[in-house]
Image 1 (cartoon, rainbow, N blue to C red):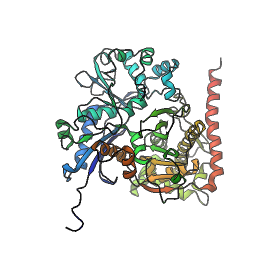
Image 2 (cartoon, one colour):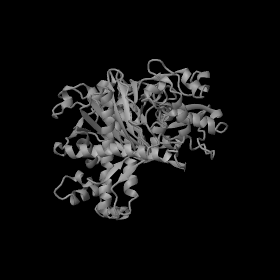
Image 3 (cartoon, rainbow, N blue to C red):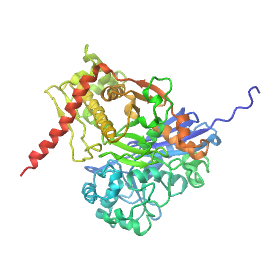
Image 4 (cartoon, rainbow, N blue to C red):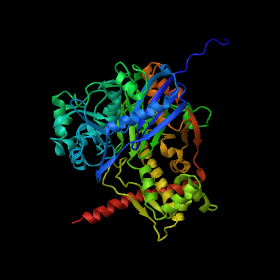
Length: 551
């Protein structure tokens, strides 16, 4: 046979658990996505700001999608499996059975979701301690992190949950345990959401100070006392039981996991950008900001040395890319906010009907409708007198204030489709202005950023991408594979298999540039003005609050 025998292909499976669905992909060693499947997962909201899921339902969905993507493949060629997930809190008893995280006592609902804001009183008390660990979360802990949720469980569900609990997992770590039987945690989860330090480990004084001294007493066995870097191989790989569930072979390498946004960052930030005319080509990887935008958005910047950014989480050592410090900005609702604004408008039924008739998504229809009504001006100029402040679920970064509310100024009596389209545009712009606000806070603290790398569901929306380029004044790089989060999860599996010497090598080989969107420099002056108004909005909100609270 000429050219010698071809080496058999090597494949990796990436599994991504998002807010509303589980997705899986089969990815080859050059990062090409060969098969994709998704499956919805259940969510419960028993009361306002309480959001719950079921770990058993999530695992069942993981099994459905994994079996789908490996159909027809020689299972011996699948070398590794990687998981990522939202940073939700999974509670199990000492025998690893689900425990209820709700007043109803429903043990099926044993997951407090990442976006759950029930623990407001607890996080306020934690922040009042001014403990030194808080400097690694931008100075103020978020209600979305795990310590306040754990304290809420202790104070509210002592008998039905807290006293019976044997294991508190971050969802990504629950999945790797389910696959391998290994309870070791990923450095990513513990450092980013649990106050663990990559250098010093757990800080006993913090847990004692906030009223969770129980963890110290049992040497942190319930929340993790064995910690591994993302991509490290766990135990003896896939257990026979998990292999049966997932439709894979026992013993396949399983990686220590990542939080979903961090998997997205891993999937895009290391791409080879040569030949695209980008300024970051001659710059270190630290000049890139990965923005992972779906239900919410996360802004991932890395640095060689720790940089402390007020209101931005981190610096976290080796939490995403080994050897680099990570800062993580974020917006609590982005895709969810766009849906909220569009679906709540009086013209939404008309929009739905027209989009369906054209076999388009409502957002593709809105984008083309905006092009129709813009006439000779650039589309972004349609919002000259309509402005949105996007913190309908509080501000994660850089103000770290969960009491902030959303704002819209410039409303009229119109409720037609044009009005809906312009409100949608103003909301997309507000999210991009929020990204600029976060980027400027990171730069003021010492980051040097020249290029945005976008991935996630919203990066498939060309208007969202162009607004991010125009409003930040920076080029936006999109991956060749739109499903960058799944590529990131597969990169973990590839590292665990030993097929790559390092995470960095796997990133360089498996993530590729697809499209570059450049800013329209001629519109810069307009967006600088929009940004001025944007900052005024929050300034005014603070003033209104002061007036109303004045005795």
